[in-house]
Image 1 (cartoon, helix red, strand yellow):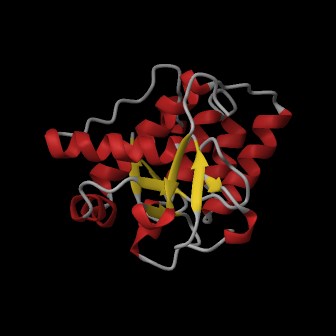
Image 2 (cartoon, helix red, strand yellow):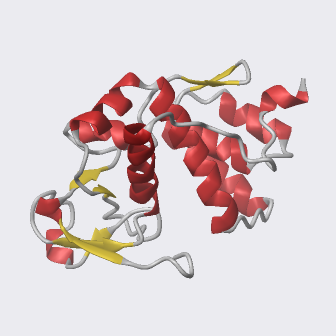
Image 3 (cartoon, rainbow, N blue to C red):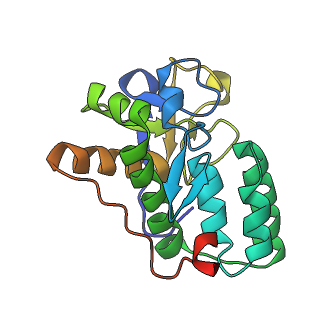
Length: 191
């Protein structure tokens, strides 16, 4: 968990839960959701793919490997392996702006994502992570309700959900501007 970011607790019935396993329209909120994102003349197939390419800045061969992957889950698995192996120790001050950039790009380029946020202007958005991630998402307060999308409470920092809510507010107030963090070098910049 990130130090200095408070935990939240919600009744599942009061929020919109999402992840890549969702059987509802909320699946569009997942970073694994397949959508074309373009930046600097390069196309990415999901937020997850772009996020791990950003995390591997300075490691062009690994960025290219992820760029060639068609599935977000493969990009994450490979990315996590090499972020660990290369001992890339990004803290929240770097990770959160990178993910925010990716999700802003998604808001501007994925009509289904933007429309879902327009159609749901107020409800809290929670990345439901029964596999145990209470930093980026939220987990069940009680084991008996794991994978139950309607009963029980979830708790955690919900960083991903908070970022999406922030971008939804930006969209309601005007333009959503995606500015690449200054320390990130995407593959196009090498050319």
